Image 1 (cartoon, one colour):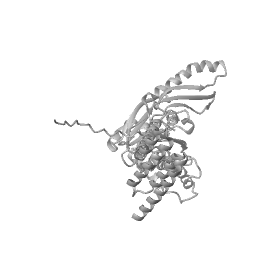
Image 2: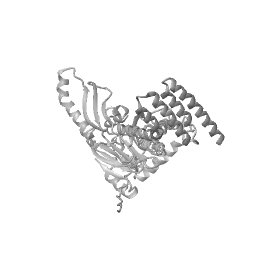
Image 3: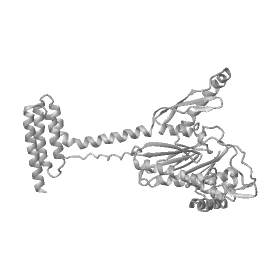
Image 4: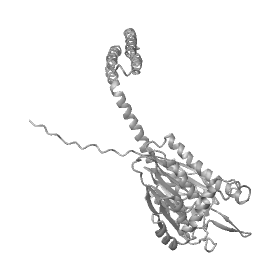
Length: 259
Length: 195
């Protein structure tokens, strides 16, 4: 009698079921949504990291707001103090770099009545602050996250294999029909920033004319870092063709979607 | 170590003797078994001996309870299956919470938003993370003109909220909205389903 060994296929490891949790807080003049995916999304270390994300954004607002008279930036501009947070210098430098990199399509200096030119870094601060704030989640083990700040999105995963960084589906809002999605991009780690006329009307200034951009539509940039995705989206909203060309030459890891 | 083990063992056996005496006179046996087990549970050293102690105790409870021979067998096997059933129930718990929060279902009602024309409120129904239905629960409906406009506008609004979700998205990228604008945004509906 012989015994035959029946081969038994080893059970494939079942992927962990990821739970999901979301937070929303109003900061920097918009609503900031934080979504996490984890096996146990109620973990206290995740909760604490989300708290640090919002604390970081509130701090950035207190330092760099252009409408809060007690912000470091405005107190410096009004000559009330020289002792400001290091972020003011960081952002000033980034604004110079952004202007250079986009051939002046992005410009953070505004002429004020009386011949003064003042720094208005609003167009860069939100993306920059959200990118930095999201880093508080990138150091948490076994978590995937998406942070959406009024239309700018950064997604990523913390340390360890959270089912190998799950994909997030980012809907690109139809600039002609509020609340409708015109396109979807899938991102595991990276950023999506959109600049357009949809929500607040001609609000981006064309630095070459000094007037607002009045076209319909929107420009979305997908890439590794939200600071630069945001800058390039603004530049592409001002001049899609020129910015698209520059993007291919200078930042080929970023992709432009025009709607 | 050896002395501690023997001391514990003797304590345990004295306890068991005491308790088994009690079980023969009154029927509080089942409760007593638990005490004996938990007392032994603290020591790792003497698992073999506790096995026999357990056996004694469980037969004790078996005889006193009489009817529940099922309970006798379950307490006897309890020491071996306990960790197993413990971990399986933990698994069940995490997958439960996972499936429920990864694919939320239910009905979510938005805040009533004051518009120039009156309050507007939307309710969405989510099944497995997708918006399957959206109903405008409150619309300005005070005069004939309102009704005329809303009978056209409301169905269109409902249709759009569902259609835009057909792509099953996690986040929305679009031109910046204000804090106020957020409340009517698609992002707020997605957030609400995951909060």
